[in-house]
Length: 160
Image (tube, rainbow, N blue to C red; front, side):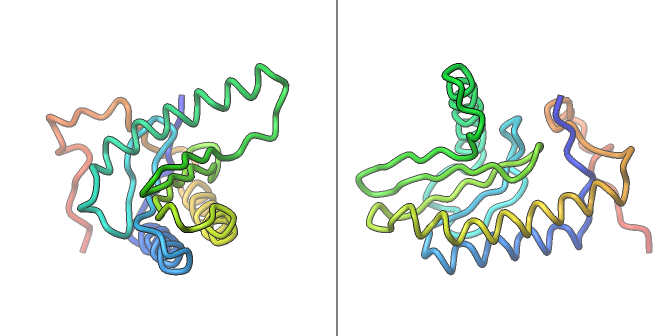
């Protein structure tokens, strides 16, 4: 079962900054940080073009399925998938044991350029997630068991 480290405001600032830089440098439409269970953590870029929550769920499922296929054929170095489209393309890359980054970019942009810029963003995000995990090693969230009907447990006021 995947357990996402507890994220605080500082973590989100770094994660959003890495995604924002990735979108700007690669001239992508959007970049999403998702957990491997398919839940959207945060996104940057043009959010109006598609439903990020649905893309997150489907991208995570696709990545996990492709990783298993790679394993079946003996490929253990699997770290990303690429979906080429006529207008938009999609790159899903592994960040760490909990998260993936999804980059939506124009079909005219080369996937190599997106992978190049994604490398730095992935490192920044992985480092920040690792810092978050060290800060509270016994506290985390399994987003798949959250009761979205009762958010009181999840959303609390910050201590003054």
